[in-house]
Image 1 (spheres, one colour):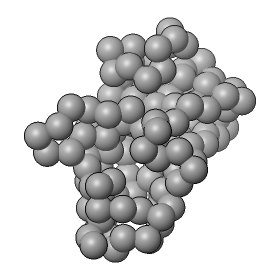
Image 2: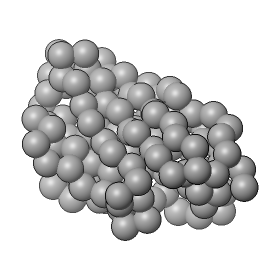
Image 3: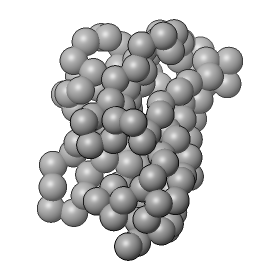
Length: 124
């Protein structure tokens, strides 16, 4: 079992940068594939990025590729999402999630543990 807590959200202007953090509990953090998802009002939860257990592999959604970077620090049980060149359409609640399967990293159903989310609002 792992608990995840997101932080770092806020209100920024278009073009700004923001870094989200995800703190995870548990001694086996390095065995979890970690992901970031987001959900805007009235829309389905969308895949943003994921990172493998060691950090050697990363995956990104098409809408954030080249602007967002996911990273992890297994010594600190932390996952980060660096978001650059933010756009108003990036406005959403951002969720951190963990999975043990190591498959289907783009699918919400593949993740067993979820945080409560952190709001990111990008004004134009």
